[in-house]
Image 1: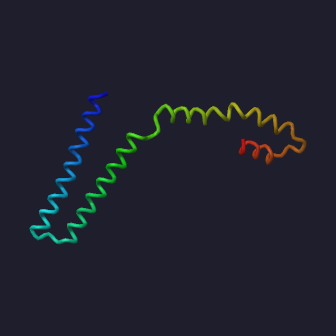
Image 2: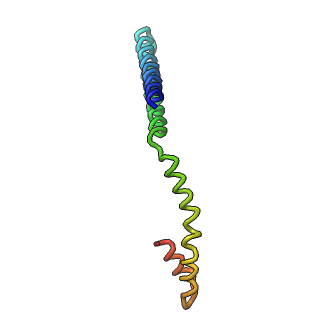
Image 3: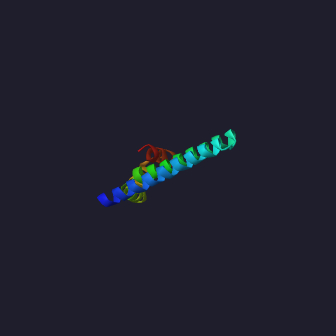
Length: 109
């Protein structure tokens, strides 16, 4: 695991160096006569690129773990089978047998 983190940090440093180099090249182009508005737009694109990369990196590192997602999925599929008989019993015990009370009880329970 340590080697993986070391490799990730190495790749992240290379990525940041690459973005920095692109920014420096843009500044060199500006000094060589590149229009200021175009250089500003390039800097904006570099910023967008880095923001999107950071967003993807955060999703990868901080997303919901697979075990939690699997538990939630199983819980959603199993819950109706476990609570369904109770709500059927409530429906049977009602005098008027309307779905309204039973569905309201199910929604707020």
